[in-house]
Image (cartoon, rainbow, N blue to C red; front, side, top):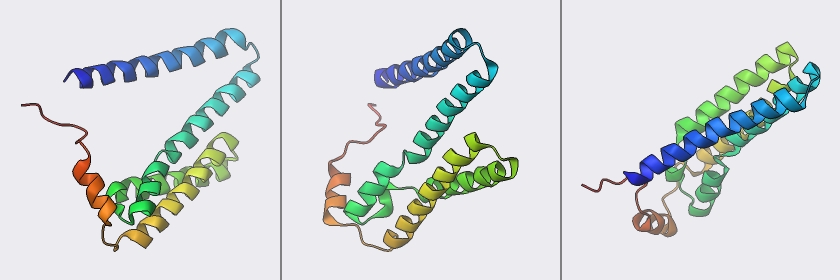
Length: 143
């Protein structure tokens, strides 16, 4: 329970602190509105690409173990769908801050779905079984 509280405090501090730093830096350090919009757009685009790239570690595990048990299908599918819809909107609206990161997200989502399709019928390898048996659960009850 203490770990959960500690994690929640850290996540809250990083969320509020990160927003505060970006807000303060762009408000007080950058006076020109167009430059401020450009800086905030670049920060948001980078964070968006990081969000889309987060399942890459799971893709490495899927390829190594030849098993999709570590990569949820719906996460990959909705990242693909979200990236595609927003990239389409960005093309229609001619918005580079939406187009580039969501286009990258669409490509990464496509790669994830292709990897999922390749390995979905594969039997879990021995290393996959050992990994899942040796790993401690993420959320465990101490009761």
